[in-house]
Length: 89
Image (cartoon, rainbow, N blue to C red):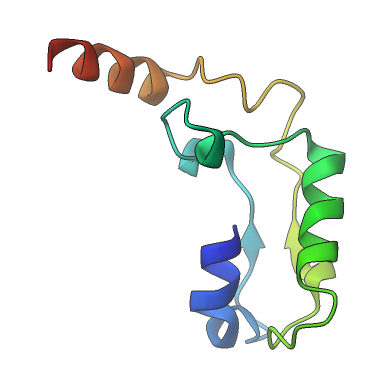
């Protein structure tokens, strides 16, 4: 999310562009930097991280509706495929 906010801020600022957080677009490894947080913690940390930054759009525009309990447990199909592939290396 941080990368998208910084890289795509001007695009996200356009009224017709939505910012929808989807678990299907998460990192797939178990590295600490790739492991998400529960929805409420994620919302709070994004607000805190960018509270003094001008990202070009209101952070309230971010739609977290698809983020459900357990979204970050790394059991989705892409995560399992990644684990299977890395086991072969």
